[in-house]
Length: 275
Image (cartoon, rainbow, N blue to C red; front, side, top):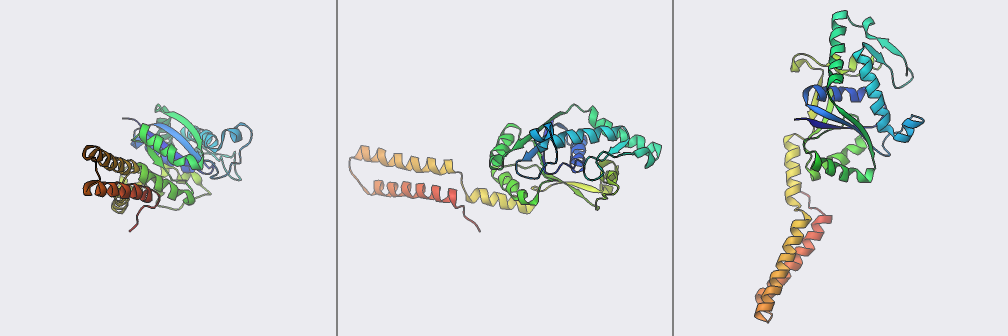
């Protein structure tokens, strides 16, 4: 079964996106990759057509260039003061090792992948995540490069919308910005998982997170359920009154219950209870 990878983008430095993409293509059966940028988050240094199409397009193009270069044994600087500089990996690795490295990225290029990019407004973020969750329930959301100021928003939306695949590519070693190719997948990955120099972690798949999210959802019932309960009680009141033709204790109690239910449904919708 093929999955979709939605990767949040902030800056245009492609290295931080390449690692989770390669991991997901090789180990998560991903057949669709979408670069998702929250408008207003990060700034683009692109010009011309890239600036018009947004940061998500710029990142999409740079990741493609970086991946193609690595498959041919080259690392191309695509961000920062050395932009445009090409390093031949044949000068860094032995031939046998270089052949293996090129094979990893060539394998990713050979996979049939639907690549796309999208910019979404901040206020539309939750509705966009809800739409993706509904249409593609097994989607993977990658927050490796997301700004911490927006991580809380994505976590909150994940709880409410029931998103259970929120991942980050966690390095076990500090990045080497002078030799950035050493912080890419081929040098981080190992044949045995315990020797990997990274972890691809589902940050919402923890005991505490599950307990907290379940507590929130249980303690704040959906508004639709509350409204249905209130309307049902009101209808019962009207039916009993129509049949009996007079106001009695049952009608009074039911009417009060329906009113209280209506009030509580509105109150807890805007002011969810906390521990």
